[in-house]
Image 1 (cartoon, helix red, strand yellow):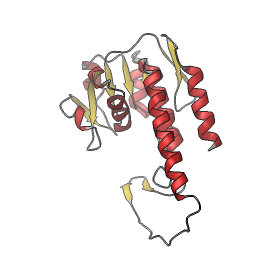
Image 2 (cartoon, rainbow, N blue to C red; image 1 turned 30 degrees about the vertical axis):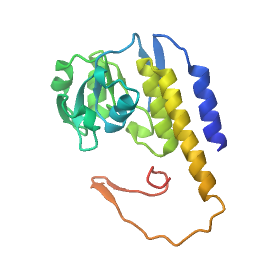
Image 3 (tube, rainbow, N blue to C red; image 1 turned 135 degrees about the vertical axis):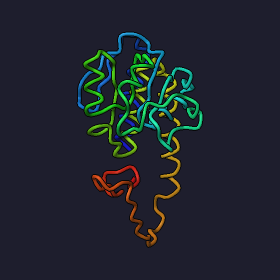
Length: 198
């Protein structure tokens, strides 16, 4: 609860920043966004959902193919799968900001002067609710929607507190074990340190 409160207070301190802005990425690197971006390419569904929730889907010009993309983005041009997007397809959309790139695609885009922002754990892995909240805050900062992002974070935190209050003190009940293999290379199983565990 203390971590959540500190997270909210930190966000309030960041409100009202104008461009250029600097946002820390998953590598701990400061990413400079010189002006408000208007042409966004989204390579991971989380960023697409955040932008839709911030009512900024009109700025998205392309997405990586994923069954997890928000329905609002289904008619946009696709730049290949999230795990191997096409550099040429991304460049053809002339983005001023790409969300969710990592590895070689991020390196190649950055070498060409394209701003790429990925947050969370290493290579954008979301490890829990704090990473989700961090992603919302970072996207809000990057696109000039800090106030909307902070309101969204506030609503999520209120929901968490409400649910925690309902279950605190309740007796634990036996639970079944569910083995969920998201993909096999490398193997990924939901457990401690994953959003599914929270």
